Image 1 (cartoon, one colour):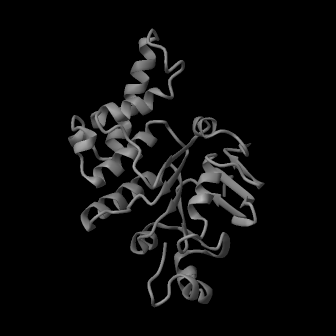
Image 2 (spheres, rainbow, N blue to C red):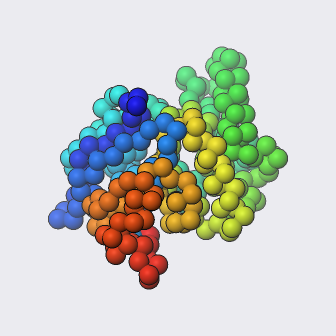
Image 3 (tube, rainbow, N blue to C red):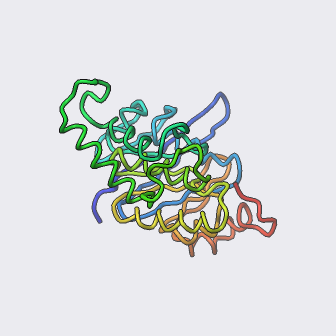
Length: 252
């Protein structure tokens, strides 16, 4: 197998005496979806923030495309090939779907903030935006105002904006949160389409979606990994059944 696109080794984050993430090691591979699950407070979002550079680790390392990016800023890690979505949708509500995606694409052009720039850079940004619009399945909503779009469409838009930055790795934090059945099904279809060109990490509450999508699962409890493997292996693990997939149905 080729080298992992993103690798974390012994990643730890302490807040005072609390280890929110403790000694976590994982690899993300192109064409594979790696899901992280666990109860509320397990450290899933903290782990995602460590991988994206939103917070710095206390110890451990993160490598992206063969480069040590530990301690890099989120913007620098993003430019190196990592895209992420957040639990709370992060879009420009007054702008159209197309304007949101094009702005994200323009952030990757040289001297993106300059008004007097080469027309070729605008064409390149527009081409990336068009590809992202199509990949996300939003062509029919191109001219819709983002604030008037449905919750599911806004989540699709956020992913489209991420795609417009041309990432190798996608970190998706609860992309199905708050969706109805039809919207969730469309999101699952979108993630399966994106899988062939990206390494993906998925943090998600919807267990049906997780088991439908994931090639590999990591289960966290209290900041630590208690199990990992294929969905079938994790489903059969007694420790996981006790801590997470129990009869009470509690998960987070």
